[in-house]
Image (cartoon, rainbow, N blue to C red; front, top):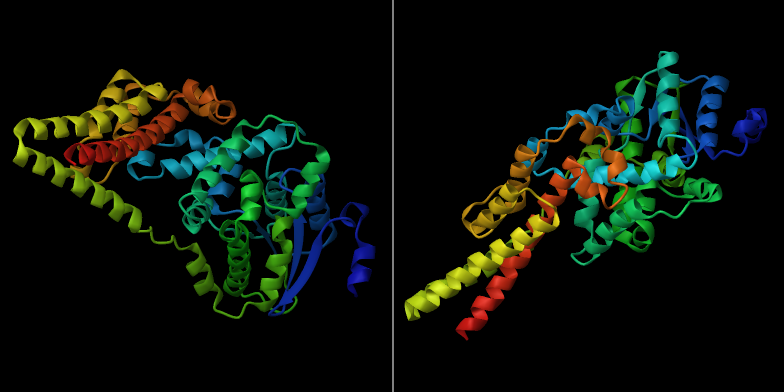
Length: 410
């Protein structure tokens, strides 16, 4: 049967859908491109499962996103202390922002984000078919995206995330359908993503390669060969790239997937610059004491007041508890002697201890962060905000104090 014959035999709901068919190593992959917020995409998934026979269903989800979709209340079990201690506050905040963006789109049309993925998983389970989760972990993707761009471009990355939360302009349904030509993560970063080749590579191209490798790896593990068929449900922004790579990839799929799933090593130069500044400042303070005790005392006082003061300012802006403010002021000046948890982490853990998040805070978290006031109203969001603002204040204070002390000795 030709491709034209297959298209003519499809039910009407599928005839305008982006569908590609790729045969690799005897396995036929039927790849359906979807919009992550679209009733038509849900209907297409249901119709394709009903119309054709498949041996497995693959979806553009990672383990954590699939778990969140199956159990929307799972995040209520989040341990804020462990999140902060393990340095995952940034990833949690970014994931919440992305879910808020998706929720804003979905609320306009009464359909949950990723409903077509859930429909695919539900349809597979009803037919006793294995479900393959082939996307890369969202945390790994965000970390690789963050490390792929330069220092100044990261401000654009943050700006795109923040703008996606606070944007209130209604989105036309025609624009929703246009998401079939893009990707939800790319859309969340607004125009910045399309103008940044490294960011596009991390968000789209690398995931195309990862998903192609994972499909091949899963087929090999399942012992699939001639005559086996797999339905692949992905965002249409990945359709072309995935199909091309599925046809052309030659390397070992497990090795390729593992390489793309690795977290890039952190750049060392920012730490060396910060360490160099701190060493220079303390050398200047020691030199000031050598020249004159009063001058050294003044330099040390400036270090404490400026680093502690800016960290305290961050806690004040975040609306932190007085004990959290005090911990920020104390932790910031001694940061160079206390490697590990940043001053923002210490202040945030005190905040979470003094103002323990309530069940209601977790239940309303995704709604609250959709408005700027919600970041101060919700105890979970305010703890994360406190972490970032105190950490930022500490960095500003260190540079301000360093420049001030060095200038006073010249």
